[in-house]
Amino acid sequence: MANKPDPDAKIELRGVHKRFGPKVVLDGIDLTVPRGESLVVIGGSGTGKSVMIKSVLGIVKPEKGEIFVDGRNVLEMDQSAREDTLRKFGMLFQGAALFDSLPVWENVAFGLIQGRRMKRKEAKEIAIDKLSKVGLGADVGELYPAELSGGMQKRVGLARAIAADPEIIFFDEPTTGLDPIMADVINELIVDSVKELGATTLSITHDMASARKIADKVAMIHKGKIIWAGSVEEVDNSGNDYVDQFIHGRAEGPIQMEVLKP
Amino acid sequence: MNFLAVIGRVVIATLAEIGKLSRFTWAAVSHVLRPPFFLRMTLQQMMQIGYFSLPVVALTAFFTGGVLALQIHYGSNEFNSEALVATVVALGITRELGPVMGALMVAGRVSAAIAAELGTMRVTEQIDALTTLSTNPYKYLVVPRIAAAVITLPILVFIADIVGIMGGYMVSTASLDFNAGVYLKNTINYIHDNGISSGLIKAAVFGFIIALMGCFHGFNSKGGAQGVGRATTNAVVSASILILAANYVMTSLLFAK
Image 1 (tube, chains in turn orange, red):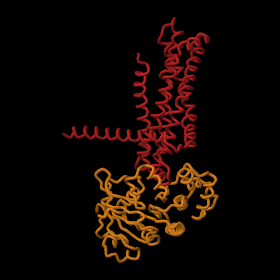
Image 2 (cartoon, rainbow over the protein chains, first blue to last red):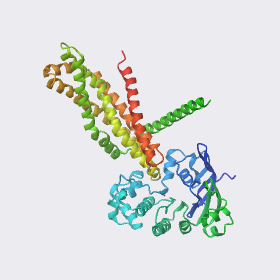
Image 3 (cartoon, rainbow over the protein chains, first blue to last red):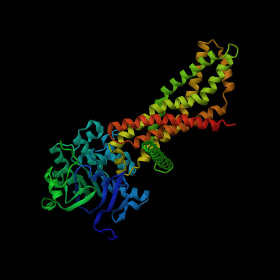
Image 4 (tube, helix red, strand yellow):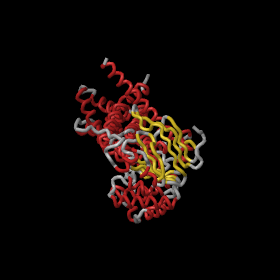
């Protein structure tokens, strides 16, 4: 295997392994996210999608493999270099993961105030601007996350993810738990805000409508391995039985769910 | 055969837990001295942990002092009771009961609250979110709580000492008909600096244990509402046991002749 990282890649994973006890979650992931593009990783529940993203962020530590961000291996970095690298990232969590002890605007401004030591007043102005980008008024900024609907929480999460103008944004199941219309609203907001920032994005989802909308490239993960990768146009003619089964949502096929039949 | 396997499993699980706790403690302590510091969070936690624990700690100390006075009075004979009650209450409260009872009450209140809050933050990915917002969760969540508890517990215990002695005094003068002046004189004669300061040192250690156990179990909770509930229970139980064990060790060290 070539040792030099791919110069066109913003993020590159090579042979990443992770297990929890006896359970192998990532079984040698190889994945490249090209600079400025949007890669969507599809795959069923429990196939290692979230763990893969958390490995890049350093929340989960893989046993083996290399993860390059801008050509530097994040797994070999010391604490402060890692923290500098993390400044390039923004992330939208599956459940939005808003801090429920803080009002909405402070959630959005959090990375600016705590992470970058910006003045609260200045950060609040940016936060309100970002909230307007996701279609929320300044009055919403004064509410607490518990007072918002699921769709609004997701939008606040998106505003928080883009608040510090990140170079890389991760989306963890951005449309899960939303009605189809709100899901589409979120998809459009993601496409728009990513375009505006010129960011590189890595998303994980099992929602094909969402994947088709936000992806330039698609990769499929199954049992801790990337089993197919290609452009979003190719996904319908992948010639891969696993991908076919997944995008058409069929119970029959090479992917067997661990369900006991009566 | 099976029996040995069970023993082995328990030993391995215990050692793994101790290892995890040691690493967590080291991570927490190593962040205490390294900037950035979250002063705002620390002050907020001092209010939560210290100020709002005042009523429960004061009430506990008051009744402990009162009941101590009654028991010593019943247990001693008429002639030396008046001298004995004041001195034993003063020594008992400042050396042992003030710090230990106070810390146990705060453990019930604060360890549980910390574990529940951080546990919920863990299962809803809020702790992961901190990392993605360039904020170290140890610095932002753990250090302020530990610092606040270590600072406020000695203050709480000092207040508990005063209130506890007052409880003994009020019971003695009101229901046992002791002479107030003599009682106070005996109290002051027998409070040694050593007694009070050892109690305050203990309180700081107990504060560390309380916050550490809350944070540790909260950080490591998993599996939704049930997991958070388990974390809360474990935090209170482990904090209480560690407080009692640490108290024994510290008494034997601080009062060694």
